[in-house]
Length: 104
Image 1 (cartoon, helix red, strand yellow):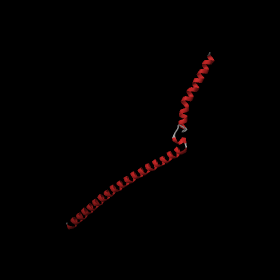
Image 2 (spheres, rainbow, N blue to C red):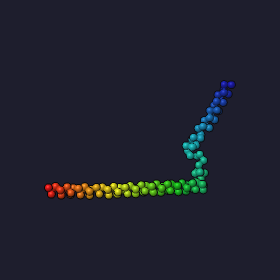
Image 3 (tube, rainbow, N blue to C red):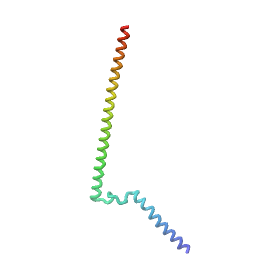
Image 4 (cartoon, one colour):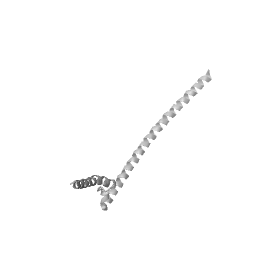
């Protein structure tokens, strides 16, 4: 009786382990039924679609980066213009002060 109970527990533990530990291991090694695992024309189609997707994603990212840089350049050029006007204004004030001090 005791040996029968031990055998049934061992069998139950084997079933438990195989059911709950095999699935994560299969997912870990990538054999969970993805299209790439199937091979053949599906694999080629999936690879081509991924290539197109990532190429489009990269192009979108580069376009956004270019737009950001162009906006930054426009902003910096406006700042430079504003600073140049301030420099000219200060130079004019200095020359006006120099003329006023010379006339005294």
